[in-house]
Image (cartoon, rainbow over all chains, first blue to last red; front, side, top):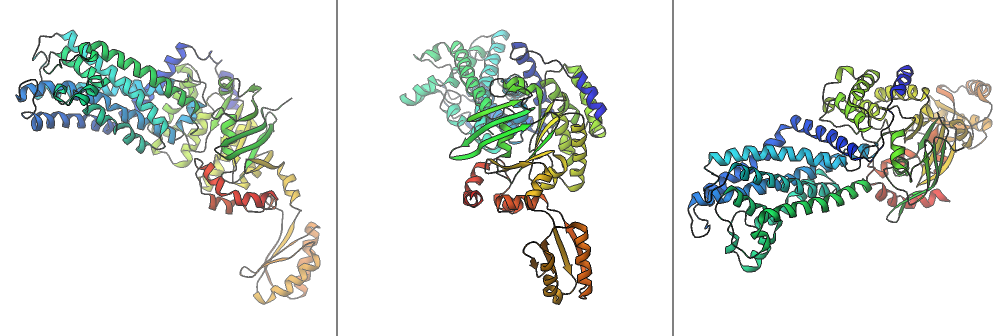
Amino acid sequence: MSAVTDAARSVAPAPAPGGSLGQSVRDSLVVAKRNLIRMTRIPEMILFGIIQPVMFVVMFTYVFGGSMQIGSTTDPDVYKNFLMAGIFAQTVTFATAGSAAGIADDMQKGLVDRFRSLPMARGAVLTGRTVADLVQTAITLLVLAVVALLVGWRTGSAEPTNAARVLAAFGLLLLLGYAFTWIGALIGLSVRTPEAATSGGIIWLFPVTFISNAFVDSSQMTPWLRHIAEWNPFSATVQACRVLFGNPGVVESSAWPMQHPVWASVIWSVLIIVAFRTLAVRKYRKADG
Amino acid sequence: MPGAIYAEGLVKTFGDVRALDGVDLDVPEGTVLGLLGPNGAGKTTAVRCLTTLLRPDSGKAVVAGIDVLKHPNEVRRSIGLSGQFAAVDEYLTGRENLHMVGQLYQMRAKQAKVRAVELLEQFNLTEAADRTAKTYSGGMRRRLDLAAALVVSPPVMFMDEPTTGLDPRNRQQLWEVIKQLVSGGTTLLLTTQYLEEADHLAHDICVVDHGKVIARGTSDQLKARTGGERVEVVVHDREHIATAAEVLRGFGKGETTVEDHTRRLTVPVSGGAKLLAEVIRELDARGIEIDDIGLRRPTLDDVFLSLTGHLAEQKDAENGESADTEGLKRSKGSKRKKEADK
């Protein structure tokens, strides 16, 4: 065996200079690939990730549709078209739990220790994770959009729109989902077990997604709740999607994010990414396991 | 000139627990240092500080000639770490695991693939190469983990309890792998709570307890500190115990200990095999039938006992086994610490 070791030593690489952007991108892709391979080996994870929002689509459409007032109507068809932007947005934020659990699992299994002992780019483990989660979010969103079409969702149902605007809406949704996975990364690094990460990654999402314009017309809320809903980062993306999809229920409001929802959505998401990426990477570097 | 692994006055506290309390180490190039101690002694914390995973509160550490605190990323290029838990991705195949680690050591993709094949061969995992690590046995996972630590054939290796949880056969196999590795010139720091393991693999041994190195030396030097050899006799008949004890007292240099239920008598002696023959003759002359007799050299267990006043294994049982709870467990052990310190 020593002969093999000696031979190996001679082919050992001259280490590339660390810290460059190229290395960061390359290392992140290596980690992302690893997480994507894992995903294909645990297909039930993707499956459950899809079933839950599909259930929401069906239940909200058929149970709540007809008793919800959007603007001045309770027409179930209007609610259906109103609803989808909200469900899509909620679905992308729920990716948070997956990121949190995945990173907590890597911590618990000692993989984070291994990664931290390697001469790799510092943020790559987390970036690789969030990028892989983004791919999963995109797949989930695609399936969900097809289900939405099947139950009767139509773009341009209230205002005319076009393919570019619809794609832009999906772009905003993915950006929001990506931002929230960084929150998940921080949660995953902060808790002790994957189980805690799963619940910790999801509990706070209920108030965030329900105190918003996602499922009800926020203009009908009590004023103080309405203010919270309108400045909720999550609401900006929902409003932007309704505008771009040409769907009903766009809130008339004096709040800046409701007047400029596309900009607000982009700004909120970028702010979340910058803030939580900074915190998460700092925590990862210091992770004392 | 300091060795391949050098540490001076390492201190690391977690809350008010001093996990490392001024540890000095010096491992010459190409040798193996065994860090021996019970759970919670600070072994893992020491390894984590030396492998850049943890920043010590104070002290100095140099690995492969590079200052660990000033240039952690350069250190990472020169070390391999095999931690307490086999840190492999269980949903990836053996090959994929090694390929990934190679790339993260900044090898080119192709080079990493070639190296993965070599390592799978070397660690006897070729047949299992394309199965997910989830299907591997404990021993196979350990071998894969070790292979991952060796991807770039680093000059300095750290192994934190490499054989914990393995059955005797797998442990033996892993020992062979480690010996071959060291014969190739790698400097190794190995932690273990198995005294036998340190005896078997390490050139030098540091005994650690409560964050301090309480003894260091070669295995022989440490054994010499416990004061030489003993004669152990197991008599056949319980009634002969008293007479046998009387005989042994005549030869011994110290107190004779008697275990009634096993009919075992032990006495420290000097004089080796010649003396043993005399003991046998004398016992025979008095008509005492014996089941077993032998000259026992001190084990590292004896060393540990004489250094700390408690057995390593007893302490393990009390202290549990989780490394995460090291701090907590140590504070529970503070009463024993006082005993050991005096």
